[in-house]
Picture (cartoon, rainbow, N blue to C red):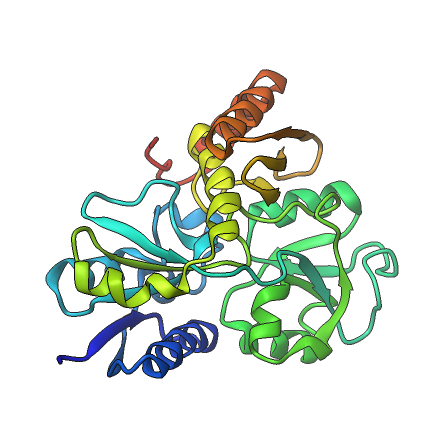
Length: 311
């Protein structure tokens, strides 16, 4: 049988994710190859992600390879995927979630509270920036790009007093020793889908779908679907100041969400319970819109070089 080819970005974390899925497939008797594909987000390295203005910046080129049949599977961090996939693609599996937390990384300070006023804190996302500014006014929040190792080296070199990263990536790479503080999901609401891996295929590719069915985690699919419904209802992409985390299982869910101004001056929060993930996601999104989320998001889109298209 022909090998299954996985398309992956070339970063250390992306390759860990691709190799992790490849190893699980090989255990099932499949022959697997990995093709490294450079994406827009990989090429544009000196600009803050929030200013690139491209939806799907870490996925577009990989999806093109899927469409052309060069690869059969794409392994993504679910938080990098737009709320609506382009036509012709589907998520064949959503894998069991890792830790959803954001964490503080520093080689000098043990917590966010311990950082002196004016400390240089690096982050790649408006969501984290906005919540950091709300938690600790007076910090110097700066954009940081590069893979995990590059960011850690910048901390070691003294370019930053601290940075904020996802716990999941550090744990997958065996770099937990760098973690100084875990933020609660109430203090730093994660990105929709954070901590989960998703396997994308061409719609109708029965062979690839059958190969990865065993990777599916029903609870993770349910909770992340709720978060992504909220993201879609708010018209957001992966680089807007929206946080969402759903916990529980279908029939007994709770969704917490945040929409924040990038300067941290306004942080809108909403938390509700429900039984249906799609209905709960829409309900919490509507509550945030009534509180003023639309105005915040419109300002963010207006400040972008190319506002994300509405889903």
